[in-house]
Image (cartoon, rainbow, N blue to C red; front, side):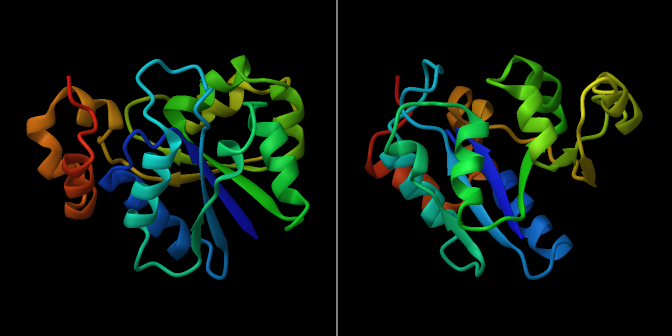
Length: 187
């Protein structure tokens, strides 16, 4: 099984690392692929994918069965469905990881009905947002396959960008050093 964990990873945080470890312990024998969005994804504060790929590689340097993909670095943004279909050529059993907070936003994604019908989603369940039942109910008229994993880590990349003084708590030492060396996320 190939588990695709997509995101902006702007920057990758300790929470991203904990998700990877949780996935590896839950889905023994799986491969995890970290898939950062490309530079033309519509987020104004997004730094160049080169830096995000470097930081992801630092994040997973000592973890087996995890790789970083440059798929979206090498083409224009076409949406998650296009990327997963491309990856499916190498592994027929592809699943997509998403946080519960982003799940409800899927209905705004490119060809989201096909995406939900064609690929099982592993949903990282964060307490206090919505219940699993409410999430399932909001997609009741759309073919989908959701598996939920409890994960209640309240760390976001946005916090890292907005509150530099919190970086020691939110980032690995290697990523902190990389950010400083490359003068990233400075005003």
